[in-house]
Image (cartoon, rainbow, N blue to C red; front, side, top):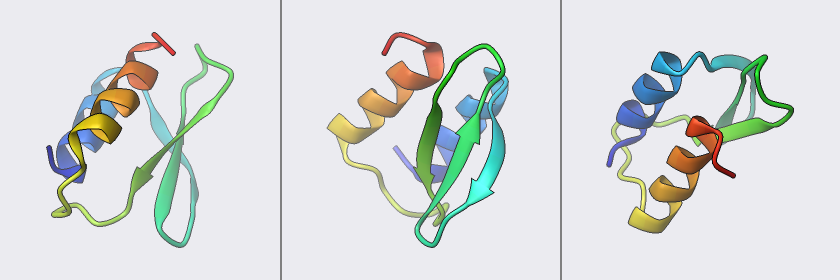
Length: 62
């Protein structure tokens, strides 16, 4: 899964950029009390385990 796909899914679930980091952007959602780090390079391939962990965080299952 590419970083751009994760960002698109995060936006669908109501996550917005809260802060830009040097290698990751941090996303926040008013429903949840945590931030999610997603890489800044849209074309970069995210490893399977990392992608599934981020998807769980996006959906609120963490």
